[in-house]
Image (cartoon, rainbow, N blue to C red):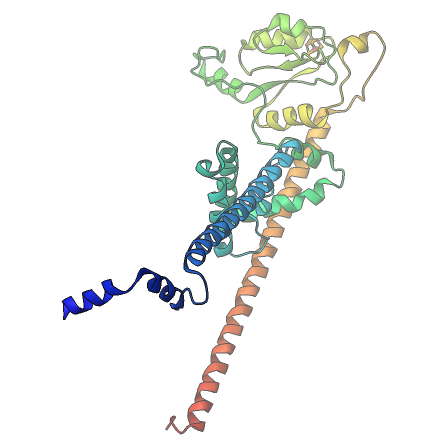
Amino acid sequence: MDAIRGSRVCARPSSTRALVRPQSPVSHGRVSGTTVGGSGRGLSARRRAANTERAAEQKEVLDQIQKTIRSARAANTNPDYFELLGVEVGDDLKKIKKSYRARARVCHPDVAGEDGHEACIVLNEAYATLMDEDLREAYEFEQEEFDYYDDGNVFAQAMKETPYSGEPLSKQVPLDHFANRIEKDDLLRQGEQLAKAVFVDEISCIGCQYCVTCAAATFRNDEDTGRARVFGQWLSTEDEIQEAIDMCPVDCIHWVPKEQLAPLEYVMQHVLTERVGVSLMMSGQGAHRMEDGFQKTREFLKFLSQREEKRDAVLKERKRKAEMKRAREEMMRQQQEQWDQRKKDAWKRANGTGR
Ligand code: SF4
């Protein structure tokens, strides 16, 4: 039987086989060679087109992320995390996660090369912030404050440029550091020294440099304005600093309580920025407003406490709204369940299966 079957196949002329093949379901109505080869080329062309389209989309996403980062850097602010992740305020965590994963794939250095490295870091930061409830709340609050900044409030403007950290700007060295000149043997005196710091009212300073001569490790003259500034706290002995205070012709060096140093220095360096260079001032070619740095610092502290109150109120209100939303959704879910159950019961009754 096998021999007969084999002989039949072999007996079929090659020309007949060529005629039979086009009648198969796959290649019906087409010349065999052309159909198979043409389909393969068409498929790979479609794949190539799809790949090109996907690569263009990924490049567009990467470009958009990098543009967001660059414009934030130019404005000296943090990038908009929602824009960075391609989500909206109020989107749920599932959506944020999905969008982040898609974008992280695009920015991965293995895909985007060196360009994607920074984008990946900022993207991770944005993701970590938006996925954490407390961090997201704080971030959203900061974002809302931008409107406040536009009101022309000098403190808010300054904080937009340079955030206030609450830390002094002059150098601080630990008590056991070799450069620290705080009293080590007399503990009573040491306690008094630890409680105070030295501060220069740069607006009043006339750049005579007497303080630098008396306590060179502590005072430096600002390169741009020629006015003195405290470089580091307790890098000179108390006697040296006191001598500088006594020598100052315009009484602009002050001992201040340590806790007041950070806001005083911040206000002096980032809020009251209007300064005329000493040489220009001495030649009578210019002057600046003689603002009271201490009064301005009191106003700054008041601003900070009002800001804190506002922040608490906003967060409280937001929590209240979120709870109301949750309660409303829960109520709607329960109503839907009841409604579905009623429909099922009615269906069973109508079909006589509910008894
Ligand atoms: S002594 Fe007073 S006025 Fe002279 S540079 Fe120092 S801080 Fe300025």
